[in-house]
Amino acid sequence: MNQPIRVLLADDQRMFREAIRALLEMEGDITVAAEATTGEEAIEAALAHDVDVALLDIEMPGGDGLTVAKTLRRRGARCRCLIVTTFGRAGYLHRALDAEVAGFVVKDASAAALAQAIRKCAAGQRVIDPGLAAAAHRTGSSPLSPREREVLQATTSGAAIAEIARTLYLSEGTVRNRISTAITKLGARNRTDAVRIATSNGWL
Image: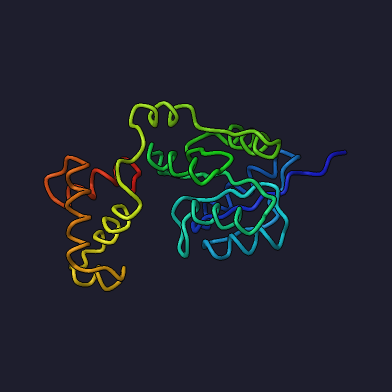
């Protein structure tokens, strides 16, 4: 008899974790070997429990799922990463592919679909939600450079230019220039509108 697929379930919502654990363990060939509520916990749990597939939420405290996936790859973890998220935005898929994740599915998928995605990932295949793949093709990749994205992301807290500059170790002029460039690239009216456009497309 084959060994069950060992899964890490990383999500900061306890109810979601408990529901998914119960559903997956009804499959027979999948077992939840570890759980995590933060990005840091997910990294340590994936390494400590030698899981086959890490189910990672996009947004978690202490490191989002994409950062976790990149860190696990850098640290030589053998597990494959499957992003499971409420945020079915095309930009997130582009970023996930850049992070070389094995799969990307949204949380409204059926339990059977999620179980099948886990099996495919464990078998070395890549799994992408078909609706999201089509949306990503229509939307295209983010026009923002990593530095423009970093500065625009920093504005979401409502911080002043001077505070952003200090936090990112940049001059205030550089911060203003990058925000201005981001606004132009996104066809936005102002930085608030730029944040809205970037967020709605999953580019932040």
